[in-house]
Length: 329
Image (cartoon, rainbow, N blue to C red):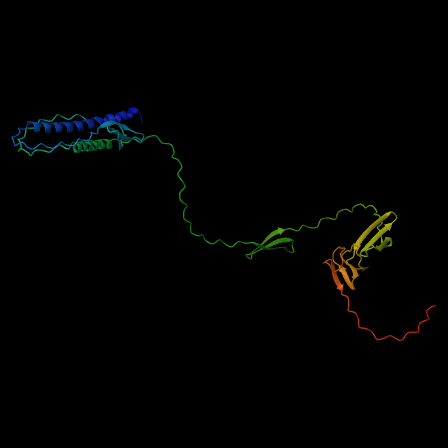
Protein backbone atom coordinates (compact mmCIF):
# COMPACT_ATOMS: atom_id res chain seq x y z
CA UNK A 1 0.00 0.00 0.00
CA UNK A 2 1.47 3.39 -1.02
CA UNK A 3 1.96 6.41 1.22
CA UNK A 4 -0.74 8.33 -0.71
CA UNK A 5 -3.25 5.49 -0.16
CA UNK A 6 -2.48 5.50 3.56
CA UNK A 7 -2.93 9.25 3.71
CA UNK A 8 -6.32 8.96 1.97
CA UNK A 9 -7.50 6.44 4.59
CA UNK A 10 -6.35 8.67 7.45
CA UNK A 11 -7.97 11.72 5.86
CA UNK A 12 -11.22 9.76 5.46
CA UNK A 13 -11.54 8.76 9.12
CA UNK A 14 -10.00 11.82 10.75
CA UNK A 15 -12.97 14.22 10.19
CA UNK A 16 -15.24 11.77 11.98
CA UNK A 17 -12.88 11.70 14.95
CA UNK A 18 -12.66 15.49 15.03
CA UNK A 19 -16.45 15.88 14.78
CA UNK A 20 -16.89 13.46 17.66
CA UNK A 21 -14.33 15.31 19.80
CA UNK A 22 -15.89 18.67 18.94
CA UNK A 23 -19.32 17.34 19.93
CA UNK A 24 -18.00 16.20 23.30
CA UNK A 25 -16.30 19.56 23.87
CA UNK A 26 -19.44 21.51 22.99
CA UNK A 27 -21.55 19.40 25.37
CA UNK A 28 -19.06 19.93 28.19
CA UNK A 29 -18.94 23.67 27.52
CA UNK A 30 -22.77 23.89 27.59
CA UNK A 31 -22.86 22.11 30.94
CA UNK A 32 -20.19 24.35 32.39
CA UNK A 33 -21.94 27.48 31.11
CA UNK A 34 -25.25 26.32 32.61
CA UNK A 35 -23.57 25.73 35.95
CA UNK A 36 -21.92 29.15 35.83
CA UNK A 37 -25.28 30.91 35.05
CA UNK A 38 -26.96 29.60 38.16
CA UNK A 39 -27.29 31.96 41.07
CA UNK A 40 -25.71 30.37 44.09
CA UNK A 41 -27.54 30.64 47.39
CA UNK A 42 -25.66 31.76 50.41
CA UNK A 43 -24.98 29.06 52.82
CA UNK A 44 -22.84 28.56 55.82
CA UNK A 45 -19.22 28.27 54.96
CA UNK A 46 -18.14 24.73 55.04
CA UNK A 47 -14.79 23.40 56.16
CA UNK A 48 -11.97 23.59 53.73
CA UNK A 49 -11.70 20.46 51.61
CA UNK A 50 -8.58 18.37 51.29
CA UNK A 51 -6.30 18.90 48.36
CA UNK A 52 -7.04 16.44 45.58
CA UNK A 53 -4.38 14.10 44.20
CA UNK A 54 -2.56 15.12 41.10
CA UNK A 55 -4.20 13.59 38.07
CA UNK A 56 -2.41 11.46 35.55
CA UNK A 57 -1.22 13.03 32.35
CA UNK A 58 -3.79 12.75 29.61
CA UNK A 59 -3.21 10.46 26.63
CA UNK A 60 -4.08 11.64 23.13
CA UNK A 61 -3.57 10.46 19.56
CA UNK A 62 -0.31 11.56 17.96
CA UNK A 63 -0.57 9.79 14.59
CA UNK A 64 -2.43 7.06 12.71
CA UNK A 65 -0.95 4.76 10.06
CA UNK A 66 -1.79 1.56 8.19
CA UNK A 67 0.90 -1.14 8.27
CA UNK A 68 1.73 -3.83 5.68
CA UNK A 69 -1.06 -6.09 6.98
CA UNK A 70 -3.60 -3.27 6.28
CA UNK A 71 -4.11 -2.74 10.03
CA UNK A 72 -4.71 0.74 11.51
CA UNK A 73 -2.07 1.54 14.15
CA UNK A 74 -2.59 4.54 16.45
CA UNK A 75 0.38 6.17 18.19
CA UNK A 76 -0.54 7.83 21.53
CA UNK A 77 1.09 10.71 23.38
CA UNK A 78 2.45 8.40 26.10
CA UNK A 79 4.60 6.59 23.52
CA UNK A 80 2.40 3.49 23.31
CA UNK A 81 0.61 2.25 20.20
CA UNK A 82 -2.65 0.40 19.56
CA UNK A 83 -3.54 -1.88 16.65
CA UNK A 84 -7.22 -1.26 15.82
CA UNK A 85 -7.41 -4.03 13.18
CA UNK A 86 -7.73 -4.28 9.40
CA UNK A 87 -8.97 -0.98 7.97
CA UNK A 88 -7.58 -0.65 4.43
CA UNK A 89 -10.42 -0.41 1.93
CA UNK A 90 -11.75 1.75 -0.89
CA UNK A 91 -12.32 5.44 -0.21
CA UNK A 92 -15.87 6.33 0.83
CA UNK A 93 -17.86 9.30 -0.52
CA UNK A 94 -18.01 12.35 1.83
CA UNK A 95 -21.45 12.74 3.37
CA UNK A 96 -23.42 15.99 3.13
CA UNK A 97 -23.19 18.46 5.99
CA UNK A 98 -26.20 18.37 8.28
CA UNK A 99 -28.32 21.51 9.01
CA UNK A 100 -27.58 23.49 12.14
CA UNK A 101 -29.94 22.74 14.98
CA UNK A 102 -32.08 25.39 16.70
CA UNK A 103 -31.16 26.66 20.13
CA UNK A 104 -33.15 25.03 22.86
CA UNK A 105 -35.25 26.91 25.48
CA UNK A 106 -33.52 27.50 28.76
CA UNK A 107 -34.88 25.24 31.42
CA UNK A 108 -35.96 26.24 34.91
CA UNK A 109 -33.37 26.45 37.59
CA UNK A 110 -33.22 23.35 39.60
CA UNK A 111 -33.06 23.14 43.35
CA UNK A 112 -29.67 23.93 44.81
CA UNK A 113 -27.67 20.78 44.92
CA UNK A 114 -25.25 19.61 47.50
CA UNK A 115 -21.73 20.71 47.26
CA UNK A 116 -20.20 18.50 44.59
CA UNK A 117 -17.05 16.53 45.02
CA UNK A 118 -13.96 17.23 43.00
CA UNK A 119 -14.31 15.86 39.45
CA UNK A 120 -12.41 12.65 38.72
CA UNK A 121 -10.47 13.79 35.69
CA UNK A 122 -8.89 10.33 35.20
CA UNK A 123 -12.32 8.69 34.94
CA UNK A 124 -13.56 11.43 32.60
CA UNK A 125 -10.47 11.07 30.41
CA UNK A 126 -10.94 7.29 30.34
CA UNK A 127 -14.60 7.68 29.27
CA UNK A 128 -13.57 10.04 26.47
CA UNK A 129 -10.90 7.60 25.25
CA UNK A 130 -13.42 4.76 25.30
CA UNK A 131 -15.98 6.72 23.27
CA UNK A 132 -13.30 7.87 20.79
CA UNK A 133 -12.05 4.32 20.41
CA UNK A 134 -15.59 3.05 19.81
CA UNK A 135 -16.23 5.64 17.12
CA UNK A 136 -12.88 4.96 15.46
CA UNK A 137 -13.53 1.24 15.45
CA UNK A 138 -17.00 1.78 13.94
CA UNK A 139 -15.57 4.03 11.21
CA UNK A 140 -12.74 1.62 10.50
CA UNK A 141 -15.11 -1.37 10.26
CA UNK A 142 -16.88 0.31 7.36
CA UNK A 143 -13.67 0.48 5.33
CA UNK A 144 -13.26 -2.43 2.94
CA UNK A 145 -9.84 -4.15 3.17
CA UNK A 146 -7.48 -3.97 0.21
CA UNK A 147 -5.88 -7.23 -0.85
CA UNK A 148 -2.09 -6.92 -0.61
CA UNK A 149 0.57 -8.55 -2.75
CA UNK A 150 1.47 -12.16 -2.20
CA UNK A 151 4.19 -12.53 0.45
CA UNK A 152 7.31 -14.66 0.33
CA UNK A 153 6.92 -18.34 1.34
CA UNK A 154 7.49 -18.92 5.03
CA UNK A 155 10.33 -21.02 6.40
CA UNK A 156 9.88 -24.79 6.47
CA UNK A 157 8.33 -26.01 9.71
CA UNK A 158 9.93 -28.53 11.99
CA UNK A 159 9.22 -32.23 11.56
CA UNK A 160 6.14 -33.46 13.31
CA UNK A 161 6.15 -36.18 15.95
CA UNK A 162 6.41 -39.78 14.63
CA UNK A 163 3.04 -41.26 13.83
CA UNK A 164 1.64 -44.30 15.55
CA UNK A 165 2.40 -47.75 14.21
CA UNK A 166 -0.09 -48.92 11.64
CA UNK A 167 -2.14 -52.06 11.98
CA UNK A 168 -0.38 -55.31 11.07
CA UNK A 169 -0.87 -56.21 7.42
CA UNK A 170 -2.43 -59.41 6.21
CA UNK A 171 -0.23 -62.47 5.91
CA UNK A 172 1.26 -62.81 2.44
CA UNK A 173 0.90 -65.90 0.32
CA UNK A 174 3.47 -68.64 0.72
CA UNK A 175 6.39 -68.36 -1.68
CA UNK A 176 6.96 -70.94 -4.39
CA UNK A 177 10.42 -72.45 -4.75
CA UNK A 178 12.09 -74.82 -7.20
CA UNK A 179 11.97 -78.41 -6.00
CA UNK A 180 13.37 -80.51 -8.87
CA UNK A 181 14.55 -80.15 -12.47
CA UNK A 182 14.80 -83.03 -14.94
CA UNK A 183 14.93 -83.79 -18.68
CA UNK A 184 12.27 -86.09 -20.08
CA UNK A 185 12.53 -88.57 -22.94
CA UNK A 186 11.85 -85.84 -25.50
CA UNK A 187 14.82 -83.83 -24.21
CA UNK A 188 12.48 -81.25 -22.60
CA UNK A 189 13.51 -79.48 -19.35
CA UNK A 190 10.72 -79.91 -16.78
CA UNK A 191 10.69 -77.98 -13.47
CA UNK A 192 8.73 -79.10 -10.41
CA UNK A 193 7.81 -76.46 -7.77
CA UNK A 194 7.08 -76.67 -4.04
CA UNK A 195 3.38 -75.95 -4.61
CA UNK A 196 3.06 -79.11 -6.72
CA UNK A 197 2.93 -77.32 -10.09
CA UNK A 198 5.16 -78.17 -13.07
CA UNK A 199 6.54 -76.10 -15.94
CA UNK A 200 8.01 -77.33 -19.25
CA UNK A 201 10.76 -74.98 -20.50
CA UNK A 202 11.17 -76.75 -23.85
CA UNK A 203 14.02 -78.61 -25.50
CA UNK A 204 17.42 -78.27 -23.88
CA UNK A 205 19.42 -81.17 -25.40
CA UNK A 206 20.51 -80.67 -29.01
CA UNK A 207 20.91 -83.40 -31.62
CA UNK A 208 24.24 -85.08 -32.17
CA UNK A 209 26.42 -83.23 -34.64
CA UNK A 210 28.13 -84.79 -37.66
CA UNK A 211 31.41 -86.65 -37.14
CA UNK A 212 34.48 -84.52 -37.58
CA UNK A 213 37.36 -85.33 -39.94
CA UNK A 214 40.18 -87.56 -38.76
CA UNK A 215 43.18 -85.69 -37.47
CA UNK A 216 46.72 -86.09 -38.82
CA UNK A 217 48.91 -88.83 -37.37
CA UNK A 218 51.15 -87.71 -34.54
CA UNK A 219 54.91 -88.16 -34.36
CA UNK A 220 56.33 -91.39 -32.98
CA UNK A 221 57.11 -91.15 -29.28
CA UNK A 222 60.31 -92.19 -27.57
CA UNK A 223 60.53 -95.69 -26.14
CA UNK A 224 59.83 -95.70 -22.42
CA UNK A 225 61.97 -97.30 -19.67
CA UNK A 226 60.87 -100.81 -18.76
CA UNK A 227 61.44 -103.19 -15.85
CA UNK A 228 64.47 -104.53 -17.72
CA UNK A 229 66.10 -101.15 -17.09
CA UNK A 230 65.28 -101.19 -13.33
CA UNK A 231 67.75 -101.68 -10.48
CA UNK A 232 67.05 -101.36 -6.74
CA UNK A 233 69.14 -100.95 -3.62
CA UNK A 234 68.60 -100.32 0.08
CA UNK A 235 70.17 -97.24 1.68
CA UNK A 236 72.70 -97.54 4.47
CA UNK A 237 70.10 -96.80 7.13
CA UNK A 238 67.96 -99.69 5.84
CA UNK A 239 64.85 -97.47 5.63
CA UNK A 240 64.95 -96.01 2.05
CA UNK A 241 64.55 -98.10 -1.11
CA UNK A 242 66.25 -96.56 -4.16
CA UNK A 243 64.90 -97.48 -7.61
CA UNK A 244 66.86 -96.46 -10.72
CA UNK A 245 65.84 -96.82 -14.37
CA UNK A 246 68.93 -96.72 -16.62
CA UNK A 247 69.33 -96.95 -20.37
CA UNK A 248 72.58 -95.59 -21.73
CA UNK A 249 73.06 -92.06 -20.44
CA UNK A 250 69.37 -91.76 -19.46
CA UNK A 251 68.82 -92.31 -15.70
CA UNK A 252 65.67 -91.82 -13.61
CA UNK A 253 65.89 -92.36 -9.84
CA UNK A 254 63.06 -92.74 -7.31
CA UNK A 255 63.41 -92.99 -3.51
CA UNK A 256 60.74 -94.58 -1.31
CA UNK A 257 60.93 -94.30 2.49
CA UNK A 258 59.66 -97.41 4.27
CA UNK A 259 58.01 -96.90 7.72
CA UNK A 260 59.67 -99.90 9.37
CA UNK A 261 61.62 -100.71 12.55
CA UNK A 262 65.34 -101.11 11.74
CA UNK A 263 67.61 -102.96 14.16
CA UNK A 264 70.66 -100.80 14.88
CA UNK A 265 72.27 -103.17 17.46
CA UNK A 266 73.67 -101.89 20.74
CA UNK A 267 73.13 -98.23 21.56
CA UNK A 268 76.21 -96.05 20.91
CA UNK A 269 76.66 -92.63 22.47
CA UNK A 270 78.35 -91.01 19.45
CA UNK A 271 75.58 -91.90 16.97
CA UNK A 272 72.44 -90.01 15.87
CA UNK A 273 69.28 -92.15 15.77
CA UNK A 274 66.15 -91.63 13.64
CA UNK A 275 62.56 -92.49 14.34
CA UNK A 276 62.04 -96.25 13.93
CA UNK A 277 65.57 -97.25 14.97
CA UNK A 278 65.67 -100.14 17.49
CA UNK A 279 68.61 -100.53 19.92
CA UNK A 280 69.54 -102.73 22.85
CA UNK A 281 70.49 -101.05 26.11
CA UNK A 282 70.68 -102.42 29.68
CA UNK A 283 69.20 -105.74 28.55
CA UNK A 284 66.07 -103.99 27.05
CA UNK A 285 64.90 -103.26 23.51
CA UNK A 286 64.20 -99.57 22.80
CA UNK A 287 62.56 -98.00 19.73
CA UNK A 288 63.38 -94.37 18.80
CA UNK A 289 60.38 -91.99 18.61
CA UNK A 290 62.20 -88.83 17.39
CA UNK A 291 65.68 -87.91 16.17
CA UNK A 292 68.06 -87.98 19.17
CA UNK A 293 71.47 -88.95 20.56
CA UNK A 294 70.38 -89.25 24.19
CA UNK A 295 70.57 -92.46 26.20
CA UNK A 296 67.40 -94.60 26.25
CA UNK A 297 65.24 -94.17 29.35
CA UNK A 298 66.14 -90.49 29.97
CA UNK A 299 63.41 -88.84 27.94
CA UNK A 300 60.43 -89.26 25.60
CA UNK A 301 62.65 -89.87 22.55
CA UNK A 302 62.81 -93.59 23.32
CA UNK A 303 60.01 -96.08 23.95
CA UNK A 304 60.62 -99.34 25.86
CA UNK A 305 59.55 -102.20 23.57
CA UNK A 306 60.91 -105.31 25.40
CA UNK A 307 61.84 -105.21 29.06
CA UNK A 308 64.79 -107.19 30.40
CA UNK A 309 63.76 -110.50 31.98
CA UNK A 310 64.59 -111.70 35.46
CA UNK A 311 67.64 -113.90 36.11
CA UNK A 312 66.86 -117.60 35.91
CA UNK A 313 67.10 -120.06 38.82
CA UNK A 314 70.37 -121.86 39.53
CA UNK A 315 70.60 -125.07 37.52
CA UNK A 316 71.54 -128.61 38.84
CA UNK A 317 75.21 -129.54 39.26
CA UNK A 318 76.91 -130.55 36.07
CA UNK A 319 78.73 -133.91 35.53
CA UNK A 320 82.19 -134.42 36.99
CA UNK A 321 84.87 -133.22 34.70
CA UNK A 322 88.00 -135.04 33.51
CA UNK A 323 91.06 -134.89 35.62
CA UNK A 324 93.23 -131.94 34.80
CA UNK A 325 96.74 -132.25 33.38
CA UNK A 326 99.74 -131.67 35.51
CA UNK A 327 101.13 -128.20 35.33
CA UNK A 328 104.57 -127.96 33.70
CA UNK A 329 107.41 -127.87 36.05
